[in-house]
Image 1 (cartoon, one colour):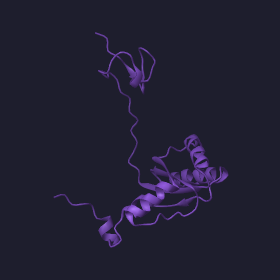
Image 2 (cartoon, rainbow, N blue to C red):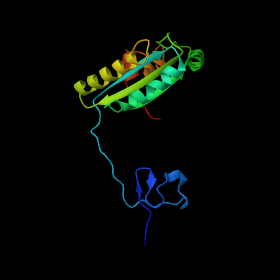
Image 3 (cartoon, rainbow, N blue to C red):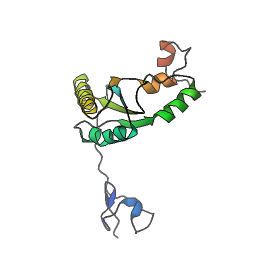
Image 4 (cartoon, rainbow, N blue to C red):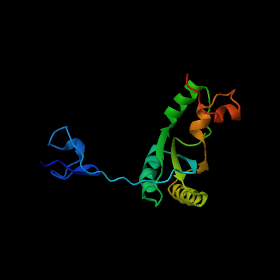
Length: 159
């Protein structure tokens, strides 16, 4: 009995991406190759404001072309930033620019993390970023104003 084999995201029978494969929706994976990485020991978030949405969007392939793979990439337009600030009642620490690119890196060593951050910051500044700063945007935006450092770091309790 033959089974369909997939390498990454392509079907080996038709050569198309899995979601466009004409062989139906039911698939049986017979082989999966995973790359296991050690759990990261350090992480950093870079915040890169740009004067325009186009400059910000153009930076994404530049980040992906670097030798370091980001954990996450997000971008926010000024209009969305304004909505988030109004609804959370908190100000985003970045005031400049019409769009902000947020790039997160995880690494197994401080040296590896520093290399990734330096490369991304240099690329961003070369491609029009107003500045490139280290920012813990997600956690600070979600942190309650009345929470102490100890409360914020404490794992949540389950009911």
